[in-house]
Length: 344
Image 1 (cartoon, rainbow, N blue to C red):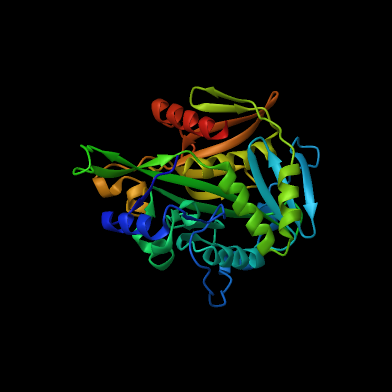
Image 2: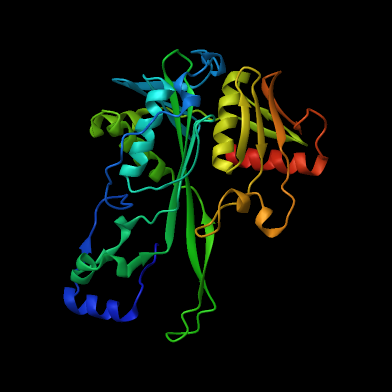
C-alpha cells in the first residue's frame, strides 16, 4: 500500500482536527499536476522528413495480435506490450506527443529527435493522496513515497504516413531505513519499483484522447486488444525468439525501452541496434552520465551491437562489440539475460 506522509508533523495534526475524520479523496488514477499551456513547438529537423526505408516492414500475418482501430489510431498488442499506430507522419505526431506529456504535468528531461525518444522527469502522482481541509489549501505539505517517469518512442509505421508510438513506465519508491520509534523517523532511500501496466494503459488512453479519440472508445479498444506470448530463450551471449525477424526486431526495441538501455543508433533495414546498458536513474540521481556510471568514476560498458537474424523457428539476437567483433562472453551473457527479463 502506498504511504502518504505529511512533510510536517504538525500539519498532520491540524489536518485531522480540521477534517474531523472525513478526508477528501481524489478519484483520478493519475494526477501529476495542473495542465500547463505550452508554446507552439517546432518540429525537430530529424523528424521533418522521415525515411520510410527505416520502417520495419511487418507483414499482416506476422503473428502480432489483431489490431483494434479507432478513427486515425490503432491499438497494437503482442504479449504484454501495447502500442499505438497513428495515421499521421512522425513530424506531426512528435509535437502532439510532446505537448501531451507537458499537459499532463510531466516535464521533459531528455529528448532525441533523431531516435524519436522523449523521456520525462520523475513526477509525483498526487491522485493517491488523501487529505482534508488543510490539504485543499496547502497541498504541498503532503507527499507520497512513489514517483513515476515515462519514456515515449516514435518510429515510422509500416505503412507510409503512419507512426508507431511506444510508451513505457518506470517507477521509484522511497523506503525508510533506521527508524526507531516516533522520535527517530529514519532516513529515506529511493529504489526502483516494478513498471505499472495500469499506469501505462491509462496514459495510452489519455494519449488517444489527446489525439482526438473519445475516452470511452479508447478504453474499449485498449481492453479489446488480444494477447499473444512470445517464446524467449537465452543461449549464452545470444537470444532466440519465437517470432519472425521483423517482429522480433520491433519487440527487441520494446525490451530495450523496458530495460532502460541507452540506444545510440538503430537501423531498421539491417535490424540492428547500438546500445549501452544503463543503471536506473533514481529521483535526484542525475542524468545520462549517472546512468552510464561515469559520475562514479566507473567505465561505461559497451556500446554493443544487437543484430536480429533469421533462425529456424523464429529469430536469433546476436550480441557483438560495436564493430561487429566478439563481445566479452560474460558481458554478452549478462546483456542477453537482462534483455530476456524485459521481454518476459
